Image (cartoon, rainbow, N blue to C red; front, side, top):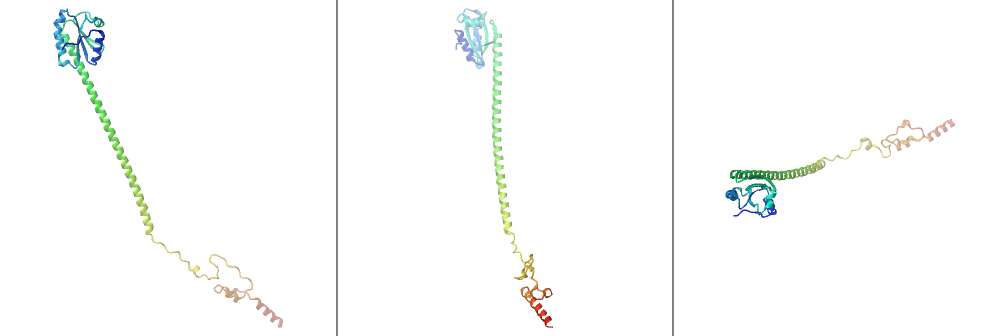
Length: 244
């Protein structure tokens, strides 16, 4: 398979851009250059090797056909092998030196492989961290849900206990024996209908009432010695005194 040969500087720039993070090794030569023809097969063998397929892009630039690119890369002798990454030149081998050419290609191939391995490892660590974070969030969410369920269960148990306590108190009150009505004291039961009520003072009896009327009104509290003589007796005594 023939190697890419950019005809203009724009074609050359496009190849560098499409290569991305891979290295681009350009062989600057001419059809009339003897040393270029000598080392040409070595360069083509490197380009065809599967070992460098992922790390390196190999191209050929004819300095006579694409002199703008040769001038931009400051090519002074042929053959010259330049290694680029992006738009920047990172290494150069001047002359038909097979050992130096192979060393340059191998060096940048190893650098590319190491960098790719490090990037892959970082991506794996990031994926692991994200998976751990998701697992942690899920566990946290489950714990919160369990806590909520426990709180709800505790609240339900508390409500049930409170309800049971109220029921027990109601049952205890209903089970207590009812006390009979308070009995009247003996003094209150024996008080006469016309007597002086407990805690109250009776009216004073009028002077001159007879013993008979006092006894009839208050037979239980009548004291004969305290009753004054009636007015009739007084008149009889006065009349007797006048007769004598």
